[in-house]
Amino acid sequence: MPKEKIESSYNLELDRVIKSIKKEKAKLVLLQFPDGLKNIATEVSREIEHETGAKTMIWMGSCFGACDLPQPERMEKLGVDLIIQWGHTSWPFAKEGKKGIKILK
Image 1 (cartoon, rainbow, N blue to C red):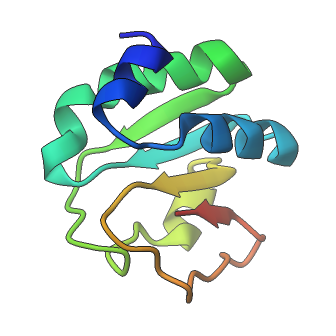
Image 2 (cartoon, rainbow, N blue to C red; image 1 turned 60 degrees about the horizontal axis):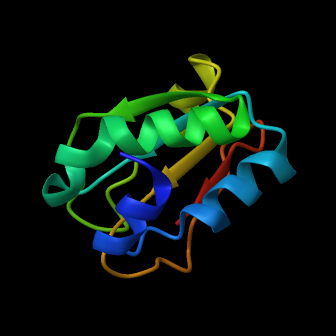
Image 3 (spheres, helix red, strand yellow; image 1 turned 45 degrees about the horizontal axis):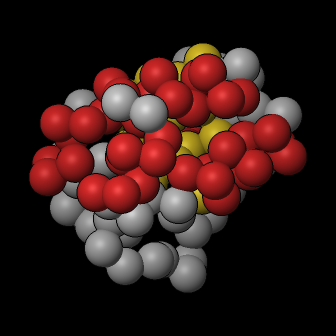
């Protein structure tokens, strides 16, 4: 599904996401979706990989809100440079992991 079609159905701010990945020079990006958006996760992942050259991983665990974030320390062990979480409300208290893993919400 091309970016334009995704964006016509959902406001995922893919341009902002792509710009952030490029700015951070992220090589491995973790994508976290609420259950209602997991049905388009692979299409979003493909589009991000195509536009940025970064590899993506889709978090298939829970996502019950902005505070339900995979533990950055564990993601760092996997080599994740950036976590992108989609949800309903932004969470202003995002923390970075020990090595400075970035979190975009």
